[in-house]
Image (cartoon, rainbow, N blue to C red; front, side, top):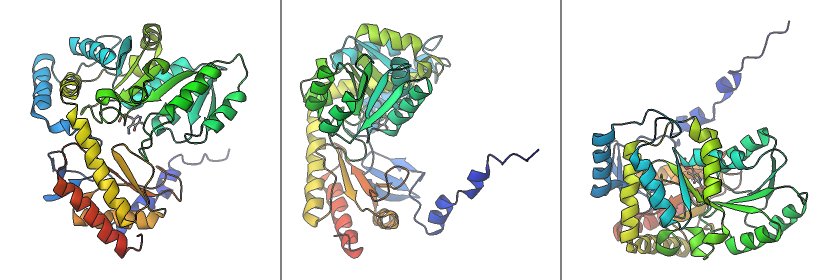
Length: 400
Ligand code: PMP
């Protein structure tokens, strides 16, 4: 009998990370030793954080920290079980009620991460013979959830990024009687671009599709009082399910979906990523209750966030950089070369600016970029530093 190939050979053959490390250009898994939000420290050296999703800066708000501490004191550090069984505490129910109210939908269901939320919705709802219609630039978690649904016999069809003519072309290929769900990021995570929701919703109506929007990067950023993309366009009733995460504006960890009672009830009783995984910790849920209160009471934070981001965007455009189209809290600088992106990243890191380097597999070859994102709590001096260092290094590297 021929000897089986060692399944771990691919791991031994994987040398890219080591090669980048050997050149001192490895941008990933860097441990931060201290943070107050807009400024973080690495090995005791302070850097402006220009790559966090902590959009309103609420992770370091004293009332949010205190809420988590109080929850630990009352409920302990873990629920030690799934929501389905022994892992539901009062805080979960209270947050579900408050989020349903905030997003103006009948019901809400919490998950332990945003990633698991997509996995809880897509394979649960889109079953054998039914269709997922997905934007090509949707977040990796939605792609993974769609592939999972394919494993259960669902069909996955994709349309060109935010291209409504191509969405219609794809919808026309689906058999008339087959159920279909259109799924899109509200704010695309790499570029910060906003979905053409009016166009998408009109096609959903025409072709009898249900609509799911992943609003991870939209809450606290756009929409009435920071309520996200459907609210931005006045289309809350036309979007069937709105999902999101607590790991960005909400300053915590976890995910949620809001929608009609019957659909949420079905997901609640069928979603494997909910039923077979431990519930969000009391500390995580309490933090969201506290940040939600701040989001409701201080809408000016969203205005500051947008003003801060616009300031950097204008500065970088004036300097001559090519930016991806965005008016949200994400400003992505296109570099279009892997080594230049890593080298630029390292130079910024050394100069005291921390951003995200996007190389493969995060983006396609030719789309390598430095993704920056901003906070309501950045001061002008932080933003000026970002613009100045980008411009100086960009000129030296011949990018501008
Ligand atoms: N959807 C989108 C659009 C995201 O950007 C992210 C996180 N980067 C997720 C889902 C996953 O959320 P979480 O971090 O809560 O797993």
